Length: 207
Image 1 (spheres, rainbow, N blue to C red):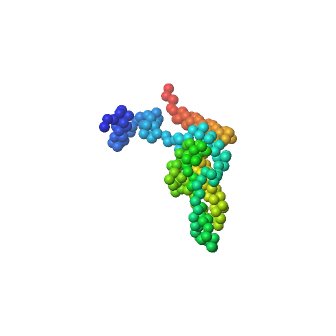
Image 2: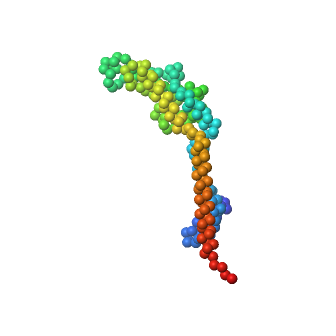
Image 3: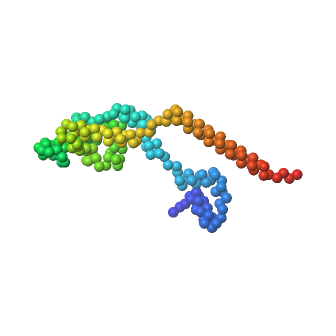
């Protein structure tokens, strides 16, 4: 396999290390930084790498709407409920299964959020044949179970959307970070001056 000059140079210096030689140019920050950037590139934040500022604004607008699915947007099926409830659970189909087709979300949800919903691990056990399914048998009536299932479905999608949202940095936080950065820079320069004075005091003047 052909090797470029960077790889040959890097492998040569690795051999020098194994033999016990000191690589003088390693102490030069520029070359070491170049190697570190070439072989260990800086990783980006997940959200920063995938989503733009405009998409974050879309997501913020969507979260403010507090969206909740309606009965017209879902498919509802009923079945016999299990557990406590006496004769009622044996006579009436109170268990509710609410199915929300993902196609119905296209005109409502931002496109990048919908793509994430179709692939994220958090919703894996709720996705069935391009639909999101929620079951509810918490109460003894169909109407209350339908309302419970719709609420749980809305909360589930809201939680997924909130997990992607990155709030913009407030002016107060920016000011605080700027002050900390300035303090750290001033402290670094003071330490540098102290070291310089210490070195200069060790010098011997020869007439």
